[in-house]
Amino acid sequence: MKIAFIVSEATPYAKTGGLADVAGALPHVLSRQGADVKVFMPLYRDVRQKGIPLLKKADRLSLGEAGQGETFALWESLEGGASVYFIDKPALFDREGLYATSAGDYPDNGRRFAFFSRAALVALKALEFSPDVFHVHDWQASIALAYLKFACAGDPFFRNTRTLATIHNLAYQGLFDKSILAEIGLPETLFRMDELEFFGKVSFLKAGILYATAVSTVSHRYSLEIQTPEFGCGLDGLLRRRSAALTGILNGVDYAAWDPATDRCLPANYAPGKLQGKDVCKKALLAEFKLPADKPEMPLVGMVSRLAGQKGLDLILEAMGGLFSQGLRLVVLGAGDARIQQSLETAHRRFPSFFGLRIGFDETLARKIYAGSDMFLIPSRYEPCGLTQMYSLKYGTVPVVRATGGLDDSIREFDPAEGTGNGFKFADYTSEALSGAVKKAVRTFAQKPQWSKAVQNAMAGDFSWERSAQEYGLLYKSLIGR
Image 1 (tube, one colour):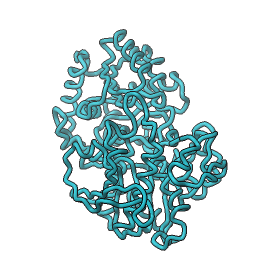
Image 2 (tube, one colour):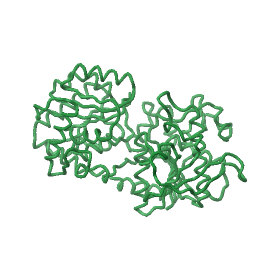
Image 3 (tube, rainbow, N blue to C red):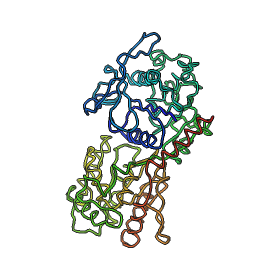
Image 4 (tube, one colour):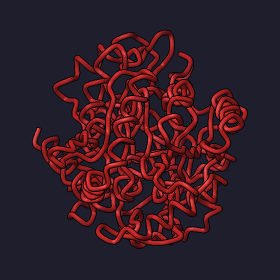
């Protein structure tokens, strides 16, 4: 199978979120499983500054016919695994951030990612790589399917190509003014409700949903949720119409990179059956956040999150006093919304002996939180997949989550009587429901044999990319067979 990934970010090259983790891991696993995978992404300033060795494949590829139109260079990464290619257009991508600065989104993002998407099609032809499956991710790459349908119609190079659009977060749709269509060389007739128009704007993501052979999301539960008005972000009707072509595949984790037995960021390593190092990590984490360490029987709850409305911080702030009365301590690492940050800082001043807070993002500290906490809290309003619960499971830190999206797919309620399950869940988006789930976890923590079983179950879970890649492989084969 020949697979082309079109994606706006991928580790280790450039990252703003979980999309990069997926695009960084999945192609390499697919390659190991026998697929021929080529990944295309922009050549950002971030990539250049990392000093990753690159080989120039083409100097002046043109978007127009007979060499007319804008040009770009094409580079290939010399690192192993799947082939990764970079669209080099400094005027569009040699910038401070991938999509935005602290002042907000770049106003020309529509043009930037339309250029990238169209250039990826040109690059495929330059490389003489006619893909069996053209796999686009989120709004930044979805517009490529509009070019494939309208600009490449009848091109024998793509005659047998099938397409898959993966939605990582439906809330981000790539909305631009009507004028963008003429600016990026697409028919203005697409500004219709049954095409790319969306409440007076042009939606790049809608191109993926409309024109792809199939559409996927990053968990089964999320594929169902986005077909409802509550989670559909105005596209639920279209997604219901495409429900026969819509599926959900849970993201995976790279256990070579996430393993408490080998993680160099931890003050002590540990493994299932040899958990002494986890106690060392807990003591170190309490010291890191300047919290008292005199009561080891008091559970330590961790949270690593963007400070965004989606993430349920409002529930935590509302329930905080009651949570601490249950006899626990909480540490939070994150950055984002200024109002949420201010509220957390106020709570930190109010509960200095119970609540540790670090504003910003620090991957080393994040790993210490996964390892040193007893429980991991994810009370999201919605969560397409989530990776933090998978990291915490591997590190023997039992998740307490809201039953939504990938959280519901990956966490099973712990049953003390049966000794089954790997976490604790609550359904209603209320502080009372959150407090109830935490209370169950705290009670279980006090029963050491039961808690040991919950930790054992958590660490035994398999959320590896190998499993997810096999599911993608089956989906690709079904597309090729259509």
